[in-house]
Image (cartoon, rainbow, N blue to C red; front, side, top):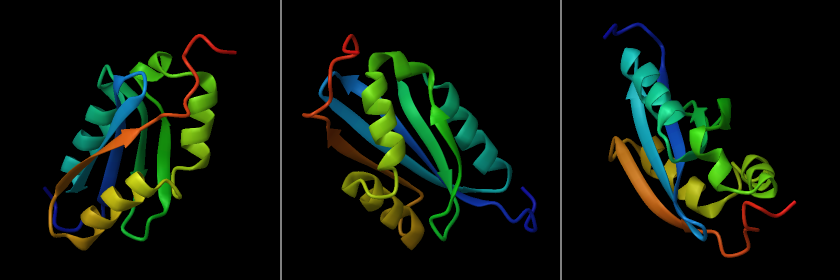
Length: 119
């Protein structure tokens, strides 16, 4: 890992657990490890949505993951729209930004999510 790479990312993956319950996983990584964490979030089979943030909480990239079919299109739109205002995601980002832990995970209930078949 290069000391001068400049990457210090917080990678968030919203993971499908069941239709009304997701988990928000977060990793803070630097350098090449940041790319590896992002690629892992992008390719995880139950990732509904993933995103990469810098330490100033600016969204660098993000999109639906391979598990996006497990959630409704309306929920995907809602997740993208509320990415920075969702309290669970904000809590995970706060933990990562503090530097106290390199990893964090929190449950996220999705009680108001429509079923995947809804249009």
